[in-house]
Length: 298
Ligand code: UTP
Image (cartoon, rainbow, N blue to C red):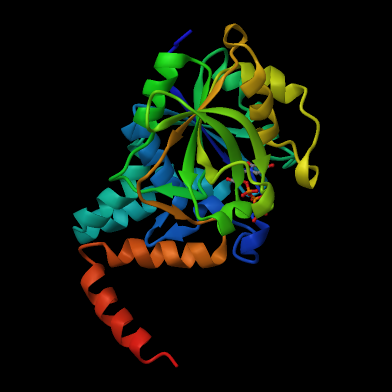
């Protein structure tokens, strides 16, 4: 049951409407967080967990994505001529990170549909899905723990985070049962963006998944749900009720580390400030300026 997870799928074909006009010709995953596109953090996280085969699900504006992970000889030569080795490393790094593949989603019919598009590449293996909206601090990796849980129990593993009750309606929410392990719960059901009073728990689903290949059959039979989109959450609900022999079972690993939400504008701005304020190069000056700026805010 416990085939090793080797491949990462990174959906980047959404319309990114919350970030228009920035995302008119650029995927939202390419927006910089401090000085790196969000998607590079995600690929680095996958590679750090041993997933060196990365499949991007791309949409209509895939060019910037492909270019970022490809060589740029003109830029490299210019930096070489200047002897700017530090920046040369920054330019070549993304090209050497992983074996990167691309597949087009065609119509952005939802996250579940984007995952289904990965089927040919993934085959009959468990695989990881990482969303660029959730930036997990490299100091608090969660994929290795999720992989352990998948090794022990098979099935699929999702990542959960406890959020204040009033925020739960912004997320998918999991109904859970405790297990013998503090940081692991059995997921019995999922509700997309519930009203506070209807939320079955305070566990929000965040954008890291280890999926059993059984998800593909389920997704093929998943009708469009919330927002008319084929939702991964709906497929996970089905997997949660399926027997283990059929690839069913969903467990949640509770994440208690640092995570930044880059999916909406306010959280994106906060993520940039928080990450930059903690950096050695930018942090001291930014923190000093922030203190003064905030003190003078009326
Ligand atoms: P979101 O719903 O957050 O992305 O999907 P979106 O639709 O681009 O965002 P808004 O609400 O319009 O601003 C979560 C992830 O799934 C991908 C997105 O690119 C994002 O990484 N996605 C979503 C796809 O790849 N295809 C889809 O059809 C939908």
